[in-house]
Structures are given as C-alpha cells and as structure tokens.
Length: 122
Image (tube, rainbow, N blue to C red; front, side):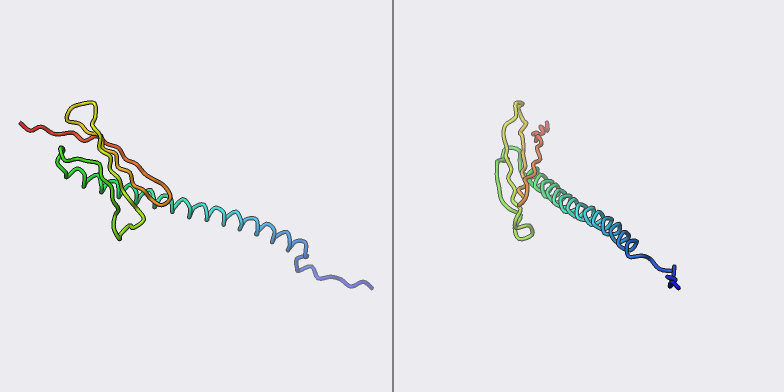
C-alpha cells in the first residue's frame, strides 16, 4: 500500500516562488518610496530658497534707488546654514539697475535676477 498525500497544502517550491515574487515587488516599492523621499527633500529646499529669495528681493526694493548696493549676509539663527548675496550693477539704460540675488544653501546655490527701475514722479 502506498500512503496518499493530502492535497490541501502548498509545496515548498510554490512557497519559494511566491516569496521570490513578493520580495521583488517589495524591493521595487521600497526603491520608489526612497526616490519619492529624495524628491520631496529637494522640492522643500527649492521652495525654501525661492521664499528666502523673494523675502530678500522685497527687502531690497524698500531701499531708495540711489542707495542700492551689493551686499551679503545670512538669515540668522532661523536658517544658520543659508547665506544670501545681492549684486547690483548698472544696466545699459538710464534709471535701471540689474539686481541679482543668490541664496547659498549647503547643497546648492539658487539665483534670481531682476531689473529695478527708478520711477520718476513729476
């Protein structure tokens, strides 16, 4: 007499194949998640740089036109690793200056350029 094997379970080969498929899928999902976290960090840094550049631009525009000069500094204890630099140069047209603001972050520098005009009121 031969012993009959019950047919209600999985073979070792089927279990190993299922585990291999699941492991491959989990590794792919983990890679996607890590890439997503990396992109989120980069976008946060770019957003912060744009916000700080805009803040520095607004501060610079409060200075009278004739007093616009190149300057540099940092953002104090709020953002100790972030520095800024403004570069003011004369444009080819009278009553117009070029303003370049550079935000220096630990990983990358971000720049914004604009023109500042003197408004003449008569």
